[in-house]
Length: 343
Image 1 (cartoon, rainbow, N blue to C red):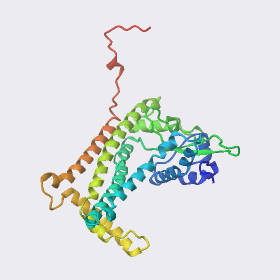
Image 2: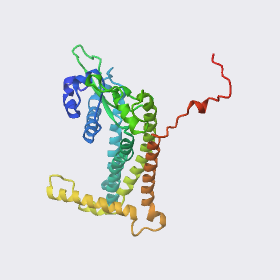
Image 3: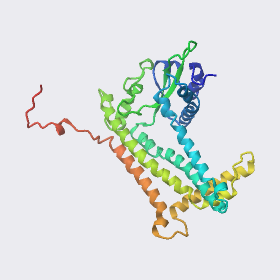
Image 4: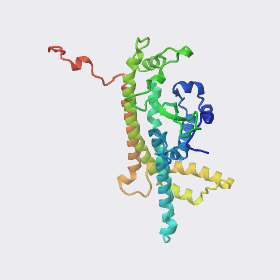
């Protein structure tokens, strides 16, 4: 089996899972509904391609290997690095035999910290993007699928395709506005999406050229949302690491089993995990009882408060721009009291 070649017939399970019309996708890119299940499927499809098809093309020097595939494979070193950190932190059996108990506790907490870092960084982005979507109607994470036809690599290659996943507002310089216009074949008005956004952000309804009025506003909202998302996600990732360092996890790891085939102990472990999570959240916010000094006592409140403040302020900055765009008018630029000559 040639992993670097993908026929369009092999993509049918993907079309079915994402509810994408194959014939429509052959003609133009198709917007995918931004649901949790679709996001998970897209992530899984990109991951499997990144460890099979894309490396195979790159290693053989395929002319069909492109920049999209290179960027997609960037998730592999990220995951590999995370697993390596977990392994390094838990190498206490060989390197620290005398302090095995202390090293084991620290190693497990650090491994949990790596896991919580990734989860908190990913989940916290929704703290900004979802409210922005609810308030303005602009979904900065809205995905679309695009079918790419590849060049034949052998004489027997026909109908070689590749499915790429992008976001409508992935590039603020060149957003894919074309996928947001209405479909004439379905009887949709051309500016149906732009009309909805215009009404949502207070520009009014029945605008003559709503797309021209909406596009600058959407770009500005997206830019501010992206900035807020980046800053807040790293702070929430820090909260995730701090959460993993709390004492309740020591008791959890002492009683935990990670063997699913041992049904009852494993179910008990899941229950203990929820209990340890709640206790750790409380300890992080309130502070440990034996903490000395004001900073150690309230450091948890500080990092949680900073992450919350950054998220809220970034969100407000993004949604306020729907009414007050930071654009200069001609009156701000042109001094009407002076004379101008046009060559």
